[in-house]
Image (tube, rainbow, N blue to C red; front, side, top):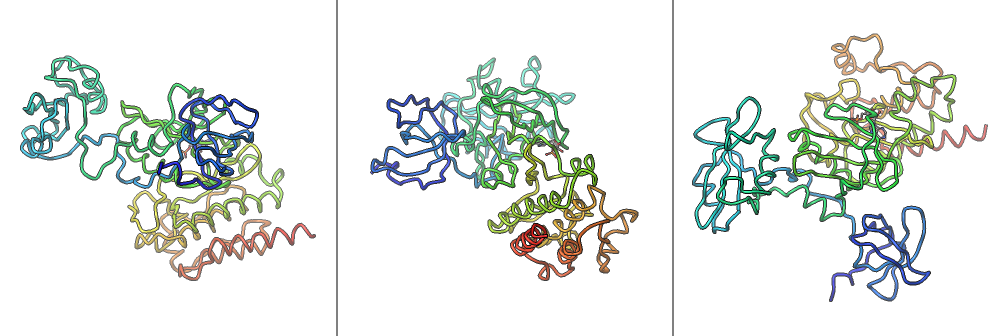
Length: 450
Ligand code: AMP
């Protein structure tokens, strides 16, 4: 039985592997790289009914497309799966056995701390080349220098350039998965030649956010050029492959370059971050209906994360973006993890993080609910910084004693009540996002009746 006979349910997303020129009017033609959504099965398991990104429908051949899947192995993804850390010469030789010319790995040098060693199998023997680290650059022959190990490996993959052989096959570190392979396998790898980078629109902590164009669509691109930082962002990208909701900034694809740069391509959010949006328009432009709509948008995204057992950990108005048609979408999944994982508290934004998360690293959907309360306060105060006039170091002790921020000027009592419920000290006493969403919808329905 062919794999194609396991049928894809409607809603399955696919990426075209090849161009397809339909032969009848019922067919849906597409180009390599196009995104298609299955909308129905047919009697023939090799053909599906599908819709393209502009809503055109038709029949498509299943073997021309690849199903898009969530990348689940986020923590194991590596840009340098051939890097084995501190292992000895003997261990390296065992790992490169049985001999296969071109099989290689990189280890930390045991004799010269700070340097690395490239170990390559060649004609039944393992050669060990010292990679010296000199004023921030790496070299084997002291002629050719590289900024990082990835650039060095890329160079010797193309050409032996004095080594016994060119590097042909990486010996993968146990428990790691090559990031590029995993994004390709799951249908998320994009092609750099289809992406036009235009100009910078934002500076993230670790790299620039640029406006780009991907096959005619305006996109936002997070460009992470530094290899160590890129490694950290692989987890963010893999979390994003697992999520789909109108109120979450949608990942479109990922480009992993051999030289160590990472590009995370998402939908373009024309009106920028919610906090800037609120501050720049202010009370005179934004009415109550608009504030309630933003609150609901974010709540719906959080209800989705709650139902899927994801904890965002960094929910704040600066991490919500606004689309051209005024839809608020949650973004920045840098700290998002499955509910069970732990978190280093050093990087946490104190004013948004719940007391139990700050104190005991206890993150849960309920700690996201606390942050959501602060976000509601930000929305209704048009982007003010929370806990105004309280010095930062006094915030936590006061909050732990039960202090809660006052209602922002003009904030409806029913909304302020929700904020206070979110700031219940006992996490179990806080409402769920589902309940919050129901209450907000109720408030909206009543407002509309008035
Ligand atoms: P970040 O590093 O994600 O916090 O992004 C830094 C800034 O870049 C944000 O505050 C936004 O102004 C901008 N930005 C990030 N992602 C997008 C996007 N998808 N669309 C438009 N602007 C974005």
